[in-house]
Image (tube, rainbow, N blue to C red; front, side, top):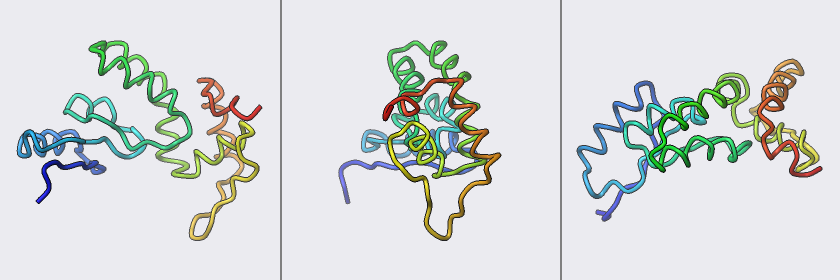
Length: 146
């Protein structure tokens, strides 16, 4: 038996499950995390999540939510979440893990956003939609390699 537990919850009703697990585990719960690319991040933070399993394409945007939340500035965190939610949602529902590679390629960080089987390249319109939403938020990834 270990002295602490780390986990992420990535299911419907995640916030309620986080609350229950944190209550049941007490002090041995060290790292309850949000899942699904932060789509339920605010509810999960409110439930006691201490981190998030997000895509890697825009950590600077996720920090704009996490930093104020953990500094006790919830309203600022909610406003940042509202700003970034269109990109979070697009990544989660349209792109999956390819979003990070697409944004990194667009920003000159990597040369190819090719994926391996069983994944397939996203349709051009979906890729364009991701980049359009990301550009409106100006994440570092789109400037990093330029």
